[in-house]
Length: 490
Image (cartoon, rainbow, N blue to C red; front, side, top):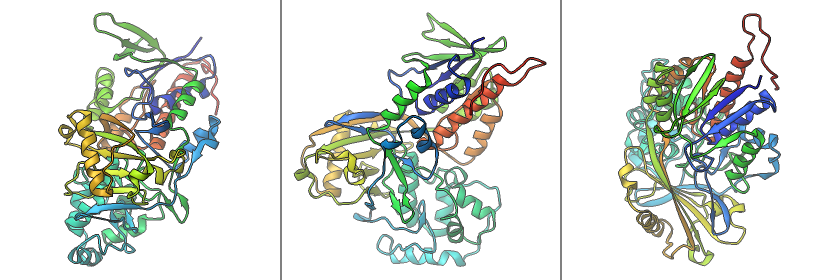
């Protein structure tokens, strides 16, 4: 009998889940991918920017995680992986653009941090004095990152380092982001008895994988792209569209776009999905389901079959953002600093939250000599600032580029990409919510995506593979004397 699996969501998580399902279940399985959009990719999107494929969602992946390189190799795309240059990032603070200091863990100073110039002498002294101050920490606690850092270091290091770095990843505010989900290495060092926050950052750096994937989200910030150990990030030549198209082809799934999934419910020993308009619904019966959708949709679809998991998903808030991509003639962008980009500190009178100098960071994005940039706008709670016409967003970015880089000429090409509700907010207690989601799922139903264990592409792929493994294990488990129902391949 043919095994039937539905994957709801055709972003990278859904397509990676479909690919993994095909690998495990073989050519005879009927895999259907459903998405209400008119394209695959979700918050990954590659456009044509003045004749060159250019990503206006995530632009990069964390190279030290294995998921993307392994998947590219599986799909025959290993040769399309590219590395960034060694261009260093900068930060705009106090009306000046300065090199982004090293020696921090997502803006948390280590003992090696050199913050002179970026911070006032009083703030530098406060950071230096932190290790001598008594620290009260209860292992297992979760707190807002901003509150913890402000209590230990003061406001300046938070506003000029931690908020632009960590807030840039999530399009959020560091004062609302939870420590355990966004900086687990630091939390683990505190749990292990680090006597100060500086000591915890010392223990966490170098010994643990970076906890978040800066640059791998629509709001990705321009952070250091190389270290002494090699490239921190990688990208795909031709954009993420290459990966998405290859996943779709290799999955051999029936991909149905412009299709809304309105409900998921039990149907005999399997599942029934209700599709389409309420006035003319369609039923799709399957043996298992993977939900690779944003948290609000996840909450809605789980409400009837897993109310506890639904409630946990419903507690995850989302931020909206926008990416503005621009291309300039070299002579019009001659004043652009030779850096990978600029983070924008809290309190600066600029509309953008970060600018990536894409052509400087990624040489393959300038085969024709044009200078290509991308600017990120929007933070959690600031959706109203994005509710203006595209030409107003573009004008705001151009004004900021004149301030930041002296570029006043009109671009030869521009594109405004809006991401409404594109980024989940990993607030205090996020890991508890994820645990409640995953533990509350009935057998034969799994979830994947950025709302769970990381907002970057590698983390999404990891959740997709885990979700596919979960439903295949349920499908192939022997039941009451019946043999396994189908092939499982490694």
